[in-house]
Amino acid sequence: MASKHTAAPASVEELLENCRKLAGLTLAELARQTQTDLPFSPIHAKGWVGQQVEKFLGASAGSKAEPDFPNLGIELKTLPLNANGQPQESTYVCHIQLMALKKQSWSQAWVNKILQRVLWLPYEASKKIEYGKRKIGHAILWQPDPRQARQLQQDWEEIMDKLCMGEQQQLSAHHGQVLQVRPKAANARSLTQAYDENGQLCQTLPLGFYLRPDFTRSIIEQRYLPR
DNA sequence: TTATGATCATCG
DNA sequence: CGATGATCATAA
Image (cartoon, rainbow, N blue to C red):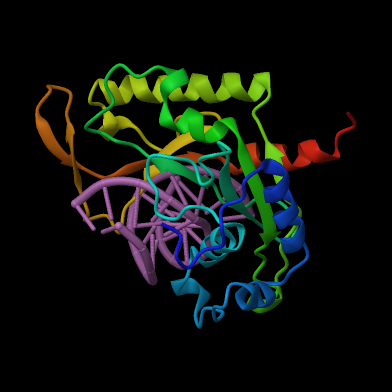
C-alpha cells in the first residue's frame, strides 16, 4: 500500500541516490517535496520528519512485520542531532510483544533483523535552529560490526531472560549497555497484557527496545574513521 | 488497540 | 544536565 508514497526503490543504489537528493534540504524544503505543510506546532508532530522522509524515499508505511524497505532488507531511521552534531535522544527500535516472547533466539529476534541493516538519516534537531530551517544530512548505510553485534546480543539476552521470567516489572531503562527497554505507550495509563512471575496474566506497560544515544553516536562517528 | 514515527519534561 | 519514564500524532 503506497498510494500517497513514492515508489519503493528497486535497489540499494537507487535508495542511496534518493538519499543524496535529501541531503542538504531544509525541513521546509522537505515539506515541499512531500507536498505537505510544516507542522504548526512541532511539539505535536514528533514523528513528522521520519514520516516525511519515509514518504520521500518510498518506504512502506505502517508495516509491522517487515523493514521499511522489505525487498532490500533495510530499516530507515532518522537520527536527530543536537547543536553539537550528536544524537541526544535514544532511538526507538521496535515494540516488544510481551505475549509472544517464548524461546526466541537472537538470530530470529525481530529487533536483530531490524538492526542488521539500518539506513541512518541524520538531521539537525537543535532548537536553536528554526524548525523549517533545520537541514537533513547524509545518509549512512550501517551494519553492526562484530563488537556492536556482540553488545546488542548480550543486552538482548539479558533483557529477554527477565521478560521470559515475567519480570517485566523489575526491568527498567537502566538495563542494557547499548540496547535498553523503555515504556512505549500513549501514556502511563495505557496497559497491555503480560504474564507475571507466577505465570498469571497481568496488566503492564507496553515496552519497546531503544538504542542508547552513545551507541548511535558511535555509529555516525564511524564514518570519520579511516578505512 | 497495537504498532509506527519520535521528543518532552521531570528527576536524581 | 543527562537519562528515564511519560507523552504526542497517525495508520490500520
